[in-house]
Length: 122
Image 1 (cartoon, helix red, strand yellow):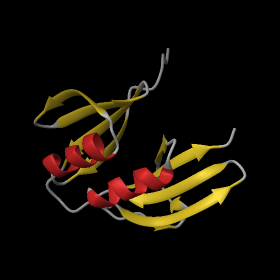
Image 2: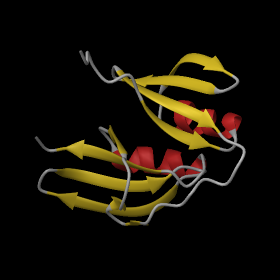
Image 3: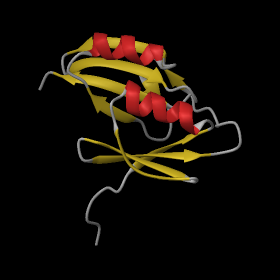
Image 4: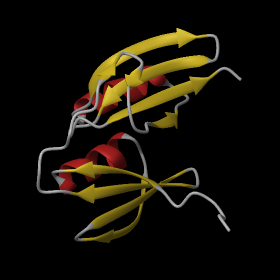
């Protein structure tokens, strides 16, 4: 029986850089670290970083996000502040929109993985 979601993970090529981005940039908490895995948490949701020794395959993307696979969306209470901080940690902004359901920011981490921030209006 399925009892929950263990984690959502991204492949990364530089673990120290990825840890800085996800821990210092996004504010995630470090749970566990091993040479082949980094386990982080955000509001009860597990986020994993899986080190790889090859270029990460690029997924089609645009200002709305990834066009294939999954995308983690992190809740933000201040998109402008978070955007500024994440750029300092290597984020590339793909798009930003204020929609009826929330203020959205779409970005890439330093490895090109797509993620979103959302300040929901509901």
